Length: 71
Image (cartoon, rainbow, N blue to C red):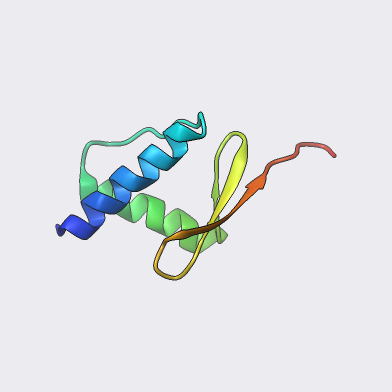
């Protein structure tokens, strides 16, 4: 594991927490990193309870979209 993965997981968890979102982590940085990265790659975004978070190819957030349900 490099500091890059740990920094990313910490940044990502903090980003969600600042927005009032929750993220359940396993405690294994590499497992959490792969899960977050894989979800973003497969979906093209991360879907929280209130927002969708879009990332660039370096996994820096570049767009946040409010989620709407049934509208």
